Length: 502
Image (cartoon, rainbow, N blue to C red; front, side, top):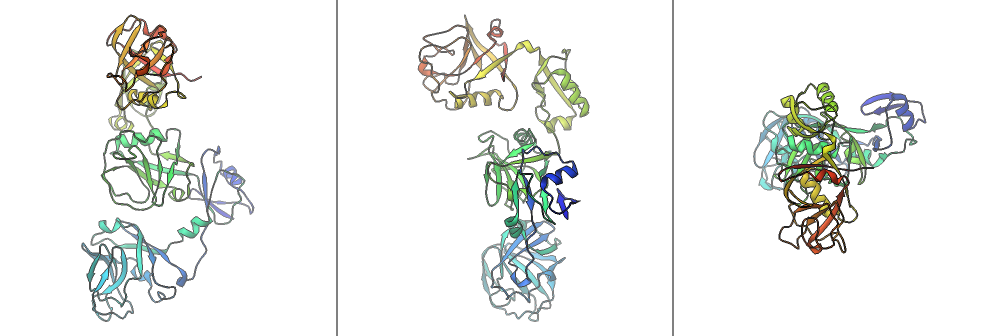
């Protein structure tokens, strides 16, 4: 039997499983991401087909028939294959002309948005047109009586981009619904295959080099090569791992099927969307890239699924790497590295540019590195102060990079206060009751004027928190393990920190 694996046709013995397919093709599958098995829809008689895809030079338009079965047998939509856009205006777009055997009149009809109907320029229909209404209007197109026979169900935004000279590339029955209803999403490699099955295991994503920050946002979310799906809808799938993250609006674009965007404002900013159906451009959504291969996989995945993702570029994140590893990575990618006389075991704490596309365009990157003994290890109390920790990590960049930077703002005896101050509302969380212990990190909460101040002490204290506030105004988020790194710090000195993992 013949099976398609990510577009490549493979011959397999009857009764073979997904595991057999992966084995014969040497496809490495570790069970982490889902795969989809798409089974062909059953062939239907022409009179039973209810949905068609009109493939134009500007994108796909799907229509659904609205008349009873059997009334459209004389309407051969294939007659309009290769037909050009004859006209387009604010009300409608027309493809043609072609010859059809239709009885028409000159009566005006009311048309709603996205109605599909036939029209002509003569009573004998020598010049017939396939017409789609863009907006509600009344007009005579010399159509048959009760002219509307279908509605556009997706690809509506394509209508706005069609111009004279565009054309219909193909018109075909849409078997997507039947295929989807027969398809399987699984991680079970014992699943049996049938002749003609199409197996998809990943998405190929092409990131847009004009979306420098949006692409970096996507690369971080899919940093391990997988995209987790937190929401599925009729028109999109979405990931909200970095919801509320600030992302700049960079590129406006129609959200066609396969388009990837990031929401940059309003509710859900920072959320990644992958579109199943066409939608218009939005001032709240910035283009990130496109799905080039594996598009049918997005039609099938469910909430909680992981999808394997291949991207056209890899994230160039040097912070936290040794200088030696950084030199090797830049050399492999033909990137010029600008650095001072660091030892190779030094750890990179800054990079400029910060974003991968900027580095690739510039073909160079500048780094700053310090000896590993200059970096303090911290442990977070996630179970006790999750909200304050989230704000802290976001402010220092620890949500995306392994090393954060604190600058000494004030030093007195064995207490240090640091910049930056945290922004946002800091509600009381994990307030100390009897004692603050040496090395613990305190954040001033909303109960005091200096909300957001970060502090650390090198002594236990039974009265005041690490930022100098009362216990009532203090949130404890974690502690520094190697407190000796604080002893010599003065105002404007830098404390490099990274999270300790056992």
